[in-house]
Length: 159
Image (cartoon, rainbow, N blue to C red; front, side, top):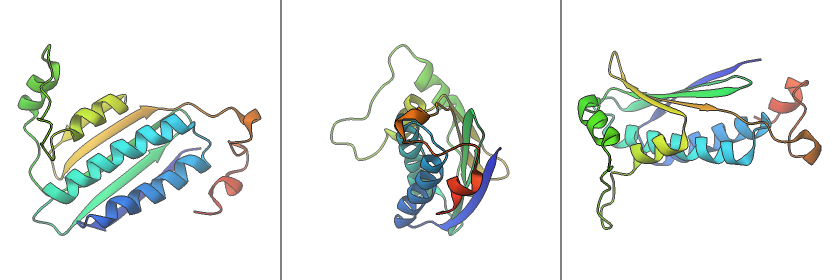
């Protein structure tokens, strides 16, 4: 069973935590391993923070999630300027990926997203979007951490 949701949020810093809370509840209730949940939440937080910072002139941004049994796809979109894809390709396909200085307050988000997710893509029309994809690993049901995959009502009752 696929799970899909979409949410539109104001471009305010507090909404990054809102996305993390909602997405985290969904992923944990789906029985994903902790490592997958942590990777997805950190990558989504980085993408949402970028949308909040660079998403003008619109006052909002959107988060869309599709969760299937073996993968998760997130699309975080806004109306701001798309990153220069040619510059991104050059930066991330070179032998040495340059990192921002130790004192720099930004510049690590895309690098983190690429490290944590299996695929990171960008689109620029009609809205600028970052698309994050990750193959999923289910937790061991014998450990008691995962809820039964056969009862969707039990998995999503507390959302």
